[in-house]
Length: 109
Image 1: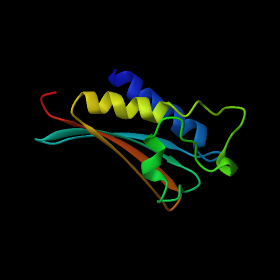
Image 2: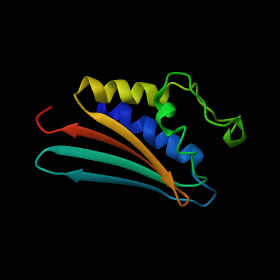
Image 3: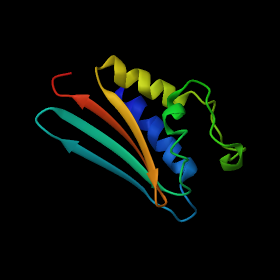
């Protein structure tokens, strides 16, 4: 299930990265939690809609759409469900041409 969650984030990052952009994966381990972040370069996402990206079937602004490669609007909702099932959390941030999605898992799960 962890693989599916990370795969969903990677798929989105590759789909929405700018031309000749970059995708970065990072892992952080502390005493209390492990975090996996996937970040890509590209157009910023309006901060008001960031929390809605995890809603089932939610699609961001159609002007950002890549109609030939868009998904169903379920990938991030599935990712959130997987992470929550393991007692973790998800967050999204977007500014200055970089968008980052982070999965956080408490240690011992």
